[in-house]
Structure formats: structure tokens, C-alpha cells
Image (tube, rainbow, N blue to C red):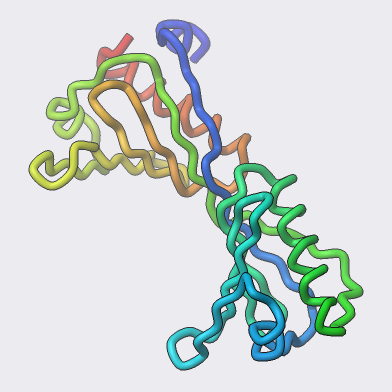
Length: 188
């Protein structure tokens, strides 16, 4: 793998969004929260969760009455934790004391970047299995990397988007595997 990897000009990948979940293990009065805080939206007839927007770090969270939270928009786990800390501070403004130290689970990670080589998407659609490519509909090729949770969008200029991984380690492993798969079919 090392020899194949050296053939690629450069690999750049940056996390753009992390979707993480946690639980505060306490019932949250969503109506009271929505009435008290300006940065919230709550329409229980349409959706059972309250949307809370955090300015810094710029994230959004779905908060459910069960105390479960889905946080989106963070670009690192540090930012996820900062967001949840702010959510807890906001909840405590309505006199709900949170006593647990939240445990976080990454559900999905989205990253974008470049693998530094031009790609012929028409030939990749034929040479790789697990692809979808309809250039009239969308300029990227969708490639589900076998043996992983990773799905890639590949563009002819070598730009990529990866989704489906749950850690930066798995993300980097998936990109490295993508590079190996491309090298096997002649991309150097």
C-alpha cells in the first residue's frame, strides 16, 4: 500500500460536519424552552424535536423531550462538546438541572478535499463496482467503498466528498483505501 500511496500527488481531507448524539438522561420541557429562548424553533405538530441554533461554534441541535440530543454542524469533537455545553447552559436557564456528563456518539462525519489527480468519471463508472453516475443529473460519481461505511462523491478534478464514517481515523483509512482502489485501475 505504501508504494501505491506514494504515487498520488497529494491527499487533502478536512472534516466539514459531524453529526453526534448524546443524552442528558432527563426529561426536557420543550415548550418552556421554546418560550424562554430566542434561538429555538418548536412546532410539535410537525416534528417532535426542538431546534436550537448555537452561534459559536456555529451548530444546530435537535433536542427531544426525552433529553436526547442530535448535534450537527460541528467540524470537530471539541466543537460538539462546546455546543452541548451551551445547550446545557441554556436548559439550566429554565431551572432544569443537568447532572450527567454527556457521552457522545458520532453518527456520521462528512469531509471534503482532494486526492490530487484528475479522474475520468465515465471510465470509473465502468471499472469500479458500487457506483452511480448520471452526468446529466449531477457532475459527481457516487462510489460506495466496499468493506467500509464510506460513500464518496468523486469529481473529475480530483475533489472528493466522503460521508458515512464515524471517526477521523476511519475517514483517513477510507480515503487511503480509495486511493489504493484507484491505483489498482491505473490512476497514479
